[in-house]
Length: 124
Picture (tube, helix red, strand yellow):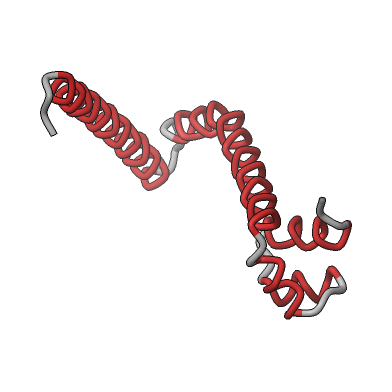
């Protein structure tokens, strides 16, 4: 079971503070912080906290993705030629990346199926 100070340190490190700053703010010594980081339970709790923060950030990006897309589309109607050009270029670049990632995903799926098929046939 982790202590309140350990949980405080975890939340500060997971939020992006350096270990030194997090330790000072949590009221623990640097030595304690580094010793705790070597503890598998502490490290696991830190990893879970970082993952939760990352998941929340991704969720926020997804929620605001449609708004951002709408802004880019509306900027293509700007009277400023540079703004129109940059927004159009950004939209094209995003579309290219999505298409590329889809293609990579399809190719990876095919490779995984081939590996599984080979393994089923007794291959190494």
